[in-house]
Image (tube, rainbow, N blue to C red; front, side):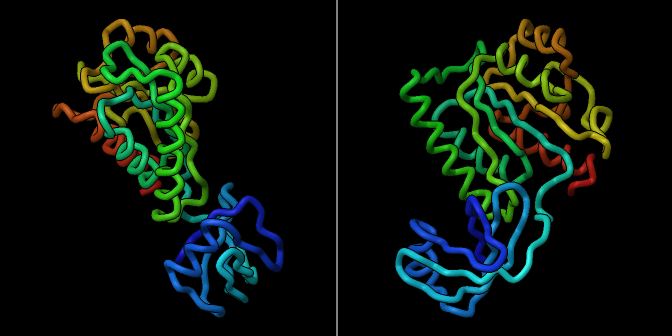
Length: 240
């Protein structure tokens, strides 16, 4: 069923305008009487029925609401070492699909891509749009936020303030089954860029409370690692 995010859902009637209204009317060619889902972006889904349609305004009757079943019980933030080319596009999309609540691009010692402030802001706008589209497609109850490009040490300190940290390191570590369980609530995972993390970065993370994790004996590409990690975390926490 088509899903649309709006900032506020009234108790009885909602109005959709702008790009979403045009998408409903022109692309989906929906008609009065058809059903859709509205989401308030904080985890509540509202089942609705279209009452009237115009190119720039769709009036929806709100029938009932419930908590979004798509939101996992664990809040995982992915701190991703900034990769080359457009790999971050796929990382954002797939991280949203597999349950991340936030994705933060991180500048590490071995990052090849080092955009200036203007370029980074432009990329961030694109990534946030990708996150929104992925949230709609996968039935999420929130639109995960894509954070601004952050220095590695600042990212570690930021993560240390909100919960547990796992830094995945190709040099070995503990398995996800050892590090998370059904009681895990807030979790930050750090994924390195193409060249991985330097030992000094690993040491800094440990000094700030991080656990070192492994994704197995195989060396995964930087765009594969966060998806593998999220999938395993969702399984270990009972969300898959």
